[in-house]
Length: 194
Image 1 (cartoon, rainbow, N blue to C red):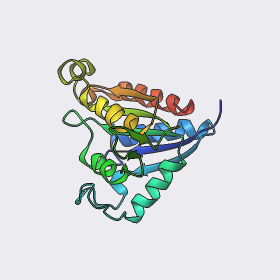
Image 2 (cartoon, rainbow, N blue to C red):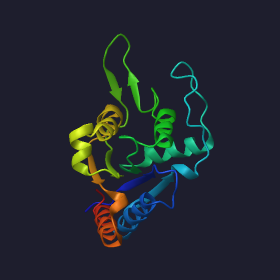
Image 3 (tube, one colour):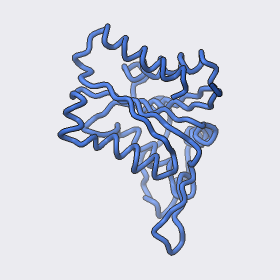
C-alpha cells in the first residue's frame, strides 16, 4: 500500500468531543501505517467564518487560512470529521469552506460558459460524521441532505473524488462498548488511508 499525504479536518468546534476522539483514532491508524498526516482543528483556528463580501471582493485570509490552504494543496486525501447538526454540517465548518473554497482556488468559472474547472482534481476524501438520529431516519426523512451537499455540492464540485461516507447514528444513546467499536473502525480506516 502506497503511503498518502492525509489531511484530517476536525469540523467540531470542540476538540474534546467524540468527533475529536474519532479524529485521534484516524490519526493513530494512519500514522502507524506510515501515512503522512496533518491536522486542522477548526475550533482552535483563528479566522472569521463570515464571507462578508460574498464573491464580489475577496476578504484577505488570516494566517490560519493561508496555512490551511497549503495543507489542502499538500494533501492527496482529506478526511472531514464532524457532527451532523440540523441535518447538515456545523456553522464553523461551513464558514471555513465559504472562506477557503473560493473561485480561482478550489474551482474556476469559465468565461461565457455554464461550465467550470475543478481545481482540486486528484484528491479523494472521506466524510466521518456523527448524529443523534438513527441513520435510517436521516436517509428516509432528510434524504441524507447534509451528506449529499458536502459530497456533491462541495467536494465533487471542486473535483475531489471519490468521496466516501462513514456515518454513526444514535450517538447520544451509544454506551462505551459501541463507541469503542466506532473508534476502532475509524482507526482501521486510517490504517488503510481511506
